[in-house]
Image 1: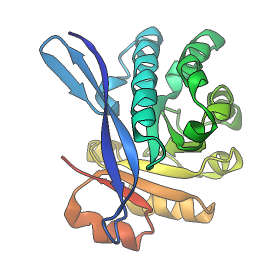
Image 2: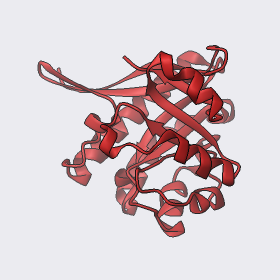
Image 3: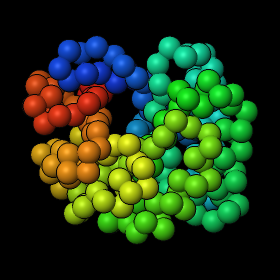
Amino acid sequence: MSGISAHPIPILSPKTGAAHAVYCAPAYKDGDTTLSGTNAVFDKRLSIAEVTDRQVDLIGAAVSALRRMRGSRRLIVPVSSRALIGTEQADRVEAPLKVLDDEERSMLILELLDFAANPSMEMVEDAIMPLMDHCFGFLAAARIDLEDATVFATCNVMALTVDASRPAAERPRYERIAELAEKRRMRRFLWNLPENEFPNAAELGYFGVTRAG
């Protein structure tokens, strides 16, 4: 059987190891093959229609997970900005979120992926606007060539994220993202981080991390 599934992963304090939120990690099963993580599930070689189909299914799975958690911790769900290009795609992504009540919306945070390098304010607003009434707030995945976080901060994005599982050539330096976020008084998160690097993340002011593996 093929399709998207959502796997809850605890988001930990790099200082204490205590869990304070949950990351909704996607996986896509195609026959005997399973693709895990946002890089694989939202592969840039996919068409916008394919990305949107997977995104809609992930949102549906996340809504089910959120309802099972019922207020225990906030849930962070990745959303590809490619799935929000155009009104038709954005409406499809928004539709599964319309069932959430006020309490559920207050526990949902959306992580925006796949922006162009140093996106314009219009690009970020176009991704946020269709979904802003259905969640507590937004994070944004940082690219290796991000030069300034001003646009994200101006659009009320709460934090920047870095995926440590990406190849080093594609991954921003943790220190650089910490500096950009601190300058705009934004939080920052690190995903898929080896546990021996938690102390360094804490020193750089990272608010939350997920373990590699």
